Image (cartoon, rainbow, N blue to C red; front, side, top):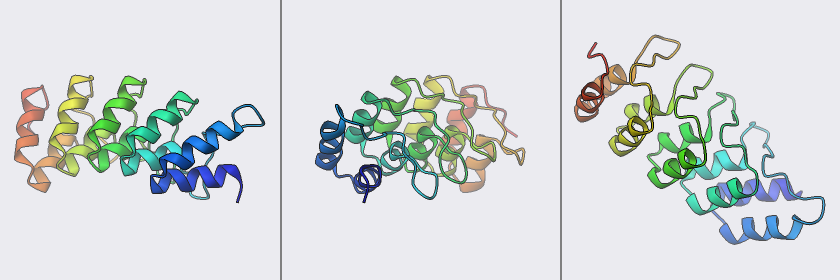
Amino acid sequence: MSNGEELLDACKNGNLDAVKQLIKSTFFSKGVDVNVKDHFGRTALAWASHNGYTEIVKILIDNGAKVDEPTGSQKATALILASINGNLPTAKLLLESGANVNAADLEGVTAIGVAANNGHKSIVELLIKKGANVNVRDMNGVTPTEVARSCGYYEIVELLCSHGANRY
């Protein structure tokens, strides 16, 4: 297994010590590429963000991980992946590190759309505070408000509408 594969594995599984060791042991040599991708096209940062391993996310960013790198078959960013699972500390860190709050995947879905779809009100609140477009439409023309309504997340509908989202 290469250092890149080991890093991906450690990030998928939340092995903080292994991540630290891999980055430290290769820092002054050829170096492990923190932006390495697996056979699905997912980066180490994507895996750590999706799984909510905030400490690992910080280490990767501090060592040059690209926060807005499109990843996987959908070309989602780390922020979108953190938002899917409601990983608030990870989402905050990504935004503080310069992640684009309005970045979209191949289907035009943004972090606020996936957070609304999954009922993650705290993520929606954070994204609104950071300037997310509350009226963004994905490639099917669906807004975060419409997604939240269809899923029965009426508190999120009201939150979005109170920040300028169209009701329908």
